[in-house]
Length: 112
Image (cartoon, rainbow, N blue to C red; front, side):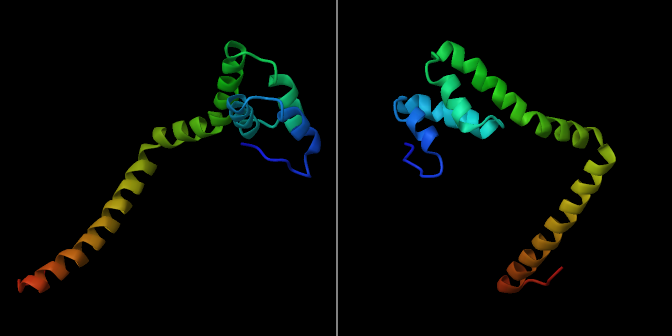
């Protein structure tokens, strides 16, 4: 639940009469967009879920768009992916070798 904040008194006045479940959704839209707090609160305070849901969905899609673009760049660069996978495999093998050698030593086997 939101509490009063001296820095945002206007927002608090708008939000104090909104049900908690709606506050959660307003907070999500605010986190996902560049829209000022008071504007989000005013715009959303009287919306029903049918109107509010597409607004929240659009804010989420807009927020995730740069991540999706970067994902597409990475997934299409197979040389980069091969390099990252090879480096990760090498690091994992180095760690596993140390662990395995410790086990061999503890059990009295010859080390690799």
